[in-house]
Image (cartoon, rainbow, N blue to C red; front, side, top):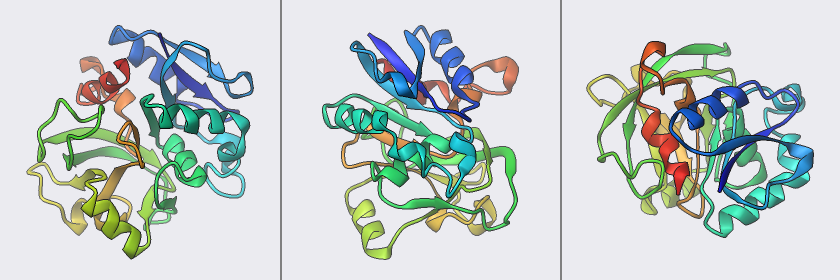
Length: 225
């Protein structure tokens, strides 16, 4: 039983994810994208970074590598899949989730702690929370603004597919609490299957008290099966 942390050329959060998972007692290993998923894969993390240098668009080239078809098939079979930051962009580019991530409204790279409000608990990554819980995670992205067509967004709302929204410390969703201009403050969404999720903030950077917080632990524990 292994959580595969998929490494592309340009990934830079793979070791962070590996360390965090191992600290949680979860068996995990880094998998080079050309090598395919291990036979005993029970969870998948697509970590942050700048795969292929964000050439063309963030995540666009990595989304078209053969391993991502394996990731899609694993997700369809019920394997938990978590795309974080660049991993979220990759998943959106390949259609694992609806919508797209584009340049921040500020047109700047932003690296700061943000508050998130839990919008659904119908996923392995939020099942230990309550709807409305507020957590704090760091962001580090230049293309984190979530956009989706209005009709598709309506379907996401109806199907309870919004995972997190940016908010203030009291859980209020507002323009002031939106760091990148994402549609309706969306910070993370679910795919067709509730075991597939993406988010721009970094839970793997919020698992150790000495690094400032542990709110990311419960999200990563969703990969333990």
